[in-house]
Length: 112
Length: 111
Image (tube, rainbow over all chains, first blue to last red; front, side):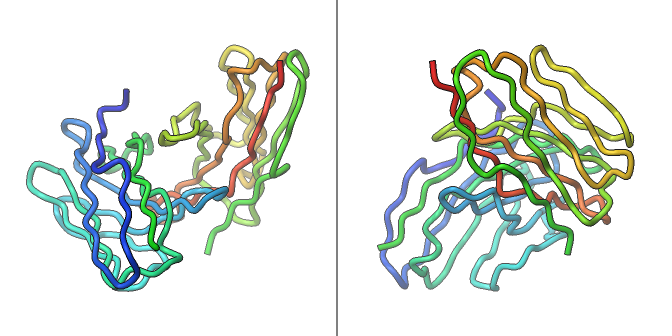
């Protein structure tokens, strides 16, 4: 049990739709990162939020966006879904400056 | 762009055997981490190595960080079916902000 919870656990969408995934960080953690993990691959960094501002981004298009709230929970939004967006989406929380991050169990997104 | 490679990609062994998996990069990392991920779950941190040449042991698992801090290895002694999973290495990028993950080694230990 890492203290990081994600919802929903599974989601099915159709191409072109929009989706919002949610993450509740471990208590006190001020930094949250989102990752995309395709089947059989390692996680790919999408972006990171620290104190409600994005402070790092991977090689993902602008239709991937996020929010971090004052209570450090966060959202990942994906617009105009494509078939290749089908993946496990993971969030991880940590204290800024520390390299130990804790992962949630992920949201499995299927785009049909 | 800092990249991490892992080998082998897949490994299937019998219970009781020993194995080593590798994580390599052409870049220097300030630290490297090893995670294990089981189906339907997020990665769980096993260890962080920080100093070049460092060796850490976690029960039957031995982790080593290369002298130049560009590579790492994970050795499992007397593997058990409970060791089955995806082993991922990850490094903090040069800015100390974001984690780069390797593609993982999928280990299957057969009883």
